[in-house]
Image 1 (cartoon, helix red, strand yellow):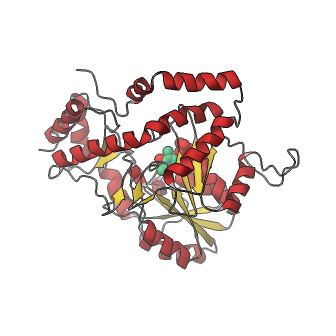
Image 2: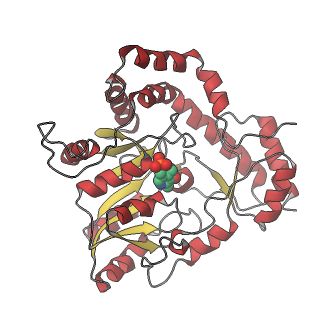
Image 3: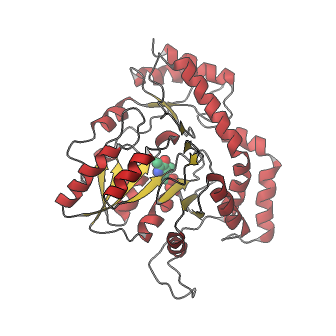
Length: 373
Ligand SMILES: *Cc1c(COP(=O)(O)O)cnc(C)c1O
């Protein structure tokens, strides 16, 4: 028996077949590799997909976090509230701009930022002489954060709300989709994300037309009306036309893939509930299932049992950001981040992709059960 794929991009490629090759060939024929027509087409399609007024593509999920922070003028002397249980880019973006990330804890059931931590984080920022400016919510593993509470908290303290939706494009709360919950929403098209391209890519969603025009300028070196009169310091943060062409093809099958991911997750949960702690969703939350992450009694035993059965597993994330060498000097809220520390020691993620068949899923389930008697 061959090993199961953790994320199977080959199965998706086989399904899309010639459509991908034709899309790439069209770009090779027209030759507009930078900001070609596919880029604008994709931006329109992405905005329509999630219901946001505007979508601005860019070169990565990390740049999608940078662009709104830069447009809001966040930098030295400013504090940005960040959950500590996430991928490093969430804190890297404010830190690169000279702002101070203030780390806060997550909720033990959803793994997302605890909205009650905003007030003490604001207080901690002020105590250190910093201006609290923004809070970044992360939709970890594909489930939206508690945006209704976060919107209230951000408004109460005059903060911008930035959604790090790198893992959650396609997810939603009730009838509203990720892309519409924050002042700006950043997503990533890194190949392993729910909607991925064949390289790096990202996008920012917002309803704020003024923010879009500043980010458009920042995306191309801070250009103004005249190409050689740059009005601000910007980035080179465009999405390649080739990646936009690939994404247009993948977006066409994305709704079906999301459904397939939901079926895989539901089947895992049905089989594993009672054996391990399975993912907990809010009442009206729809996850995009970037990861299916469980809390077993002993993850080393599960990892070993899975390995023997040819089932790959992964740990997202073994070290919370406030414990990482490059970030440990940044402030943490006074109550600490004990939930995140506990989760980092216990989580383990199982293979998850839309093309996981029942037989392979049963192998995963059997291996988990064998490792958690
Ligand atoms: C992947 C990821 C990013 C960064 O995206 P890139 O496209 O790799 O720059 C940011 N935040 C989170 C939570 C992510 O998972």
